[in-house]
Length: 168
Image 1 (cartoon, rainbow, N blue to C red):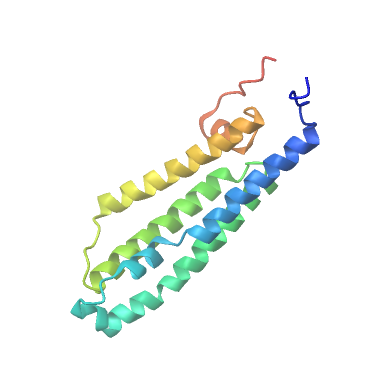
Image 2 (tube, rainbow, N blue to C red):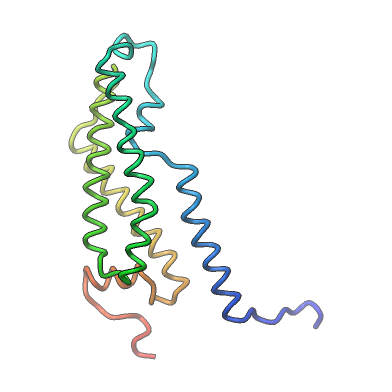
């Protein structure tokens, strides 16, 4: 019986979940950059267009997207929690709009500096994939809340329905 551990009290579980969520928020801040910034980093400086003033100005302009990207990584979950998911449609729309602008500017930057541009269809596909990944990540974290977390509330707000625990 010495090997059997008693279940952790709810307060310890909450602290563990809070630590997991905090780590989940900090890792993206340390590891991710905006699409424009990633494009600027990946540019081929051997191309003649790279040395132009237009290219240099486009690279400098990526700072705006980087600031917006980091800001929305912090602000979006904060607003979502403070509004208990009520602001989800606005947050989703705002993030999709900012992501689209970032990807359009990254494509323009690439083309200005001698690289390939992305088509509108490719950009739209990337934005949809990014939004779906964000929704899937939120839903996975929500599973720890028994369907009562933010992702479930957002889903019910957007698509209707009830909680899976309503009949209990």
